[in-house]
Length: 154
Image 1 (cartoon, rainbow, N blue to C red):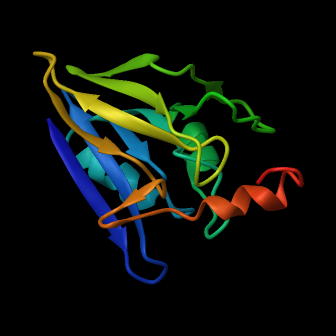
Image 2 (cartoon, rainbow, N blue to C red):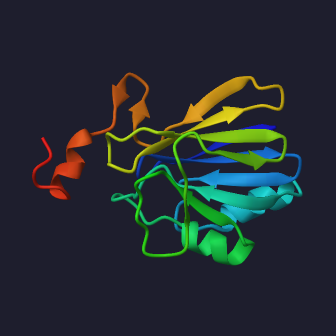
């Protein structure tokens, strides 16, 4: 199993790459998807899923291009309402990526559809989470952004 952070310094953004047993998943990809495709090819892996932690306001995601070019399924958390083909997962729903399990944890706060993904190995050991902008080291993502979408939210 490989988990790799793909950091983009120009906008302080990190995407994540998970590979296990020749299957891969990308989390929060940037618009330019070729580096993710190249990374998967290096591991002789097929990109199976594109997991989005939330709808991004600070960059354009490459989820649609990855889905089209790689045949990957786009996954959002429970309350997302995308205007394109995507799988809207339920809280605690699990996805297999090779020998790994990715568990959906609905974590609204930064945005109303914010979702964290728990990585679990083949023995059931939890290895970490990919939280998008919900959690930072020593901080949390801004929860006030949702107020622009729902006027009566306090």
